[in-house]
Length: 205
Image (cartoon, rainbow, N blue to C red; front, side, top):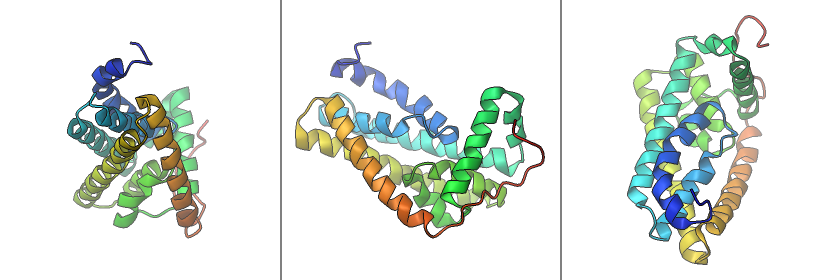
């Protein structure tokens, strides 16, 4: 794959979206936002189908949220502790919960995904709080659609407005997204506690 070629990215972006967005559900440092924004920028350049990018991003986001929710709802998070990488992920979940707060309300399930680590924290907190499966699924689905529309739209807008190469438009979109996310994060975290709600026996390793 030629990483500087819009044609190469246009052909591969559909295959990148699902694993990257799914992985981001458990491990937030995975750059799912950048991949989805790139999909939007490629759509503006006529190299990708914007509706397919939207659908894949929303579906992967919703699926990842459901996986994390069920993991904590069924009290299976200890399974991660069997592997070194799993213990790191588990600790990262605790850290995300501590930073994003303890809210598992429906509004938080929809909106917290727009701040760093918020998607993971609210999905885990909802599972711990035994939020109804139907309620969580509906809110996670709505949040996933809004999240996908925001990021794809950001990439499409920057690509259309700047007329720069897709990678430059993607970087601009990522910077704008980070700024907005940081502002929202500051506002939200000031109103929440900073203690993780996860109460599980034994060290994480």
